[in-house]
Length: 420
Image (cartoon, rainbow, N blue to C red; front, side, top):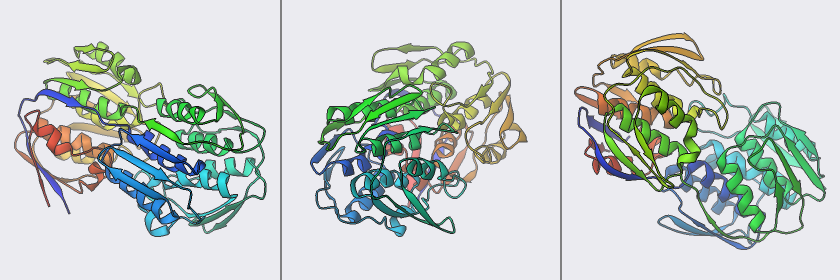
């Protein structure tokens, strides 16, 4: 098992480039199933979950040419309607293949999706199933472990999300593109990745309006083309690097990003004293010696992202005072802070959704295990601050979301190495 060895206390300086958004890439790949033509995807991040998506697509019969940050996908010869359990078990977004397969073939079989500790069995797929049922599909379920969804003729529908969900919004939006009639999705998620996906689908013949708002309307079409899609910058990577710069009291320029996608974080920076310069496609986080505490509540976009909660918790360990972190999106997402306490952080867990962080505290190197992608990057930031050496195991989880993180941080002056 691979691990990171990090010696903390090094000042960082320089420039780092943001890659394509993981959460956009993992939706455009299954969207390739909506057309028999060849799609060219640019600005792909080179991360674990992309490879898993390609493996699953190849298993279905797709032809893929992948080199660097670009891929060509042709699904003309796809002839399977069943997702491999061995492959789908490895990542949560395997469920995103279900909607496009259902729209194209009228039938799909799939296992309950896998993923990291916050995303496997603890995250149900009931909203997906409810949405497919609203479109006229029938569901056969085997003990909540395997599903068979089928419909002779899918029908347009109006569906209200009882819980706001990014992935279900995207899944039903893709499915509805090939269903005759007008479908209306209400109480939708509004993330930039949804709008980017809709823009691409519209450029290929779909008729989607309202993406990026709570109500999306889809006029079904008979056929979609493919064309090209350039993945937008990863806003979570942008925010993670911005927090890393602030927490390590370093000056770092973050290139090829979209600052307007992380306004909730920048608004907090204004309040806690983190100095920065915002350009059209860059951020410069300037050295900040004194950080004020500030409470957060995670919320759906455009609120504070749950995926930045872990790095932000590290930042608050260095703030001068007490802050309350309220995780409203996922259960179990604060449990990782026990490892932070082992490093010397002053954290009180009020309940599974709330912690109180008191700072500033000196952190010390420890031997730790990364439980998931976002807690993993937070532990890396903590290690960069900490006195002494930190070992972080199970960095497979970090590699799932951050491309060649060690190599990129070394260029900023971090003392980090990867050991197999």
